[in-house]
Image 1 (tube, rainbow, N blue to C red):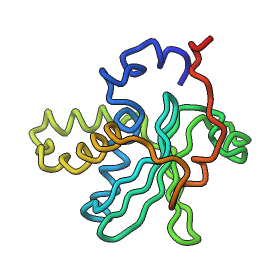
Image 2 (tube, rainbow, N blue to C red; image 1 turned 60 degrees about the vertical axis):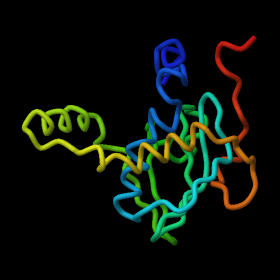
Image 3 (cartoon, rainbow, N blue to C red; image 1 turned 135 degrees about the vertical axis):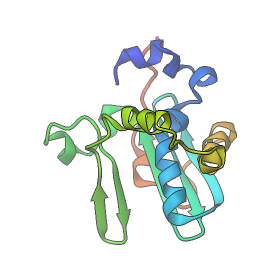
Length: 160
């Protein structure tokens, strides 16, 4: 995402909801659909370019990490020429799903226009998760945190 991100409405938490809302809400929605009701929501790191935390669902414990900073992408992914990385690891198996996201909004909007949209209840848990993330004070690197949460923090691109 470049410097444009920080000058657009997306770069202002009061307008966009921040990283968890901007790039995470669909991920959290998917986790809820798969693993059930959220029981615990802890935030470890929440800065201008990343957020990390721990969610406990009925059927899974999830250490999550979201970032718009290219430097946080694994080196082996960068070597493939990719600019995004989306993956879930369950046990020893990693499911990578970085591709196929470019047209999802268009397809979803068409679905709504066709009268097959979603109900507020369908989105409620994901909205509550990102709301709670946005309003928590991060606890730091304590407990069961995602390994990428330890990556060096970056200065905001407009800081002097």
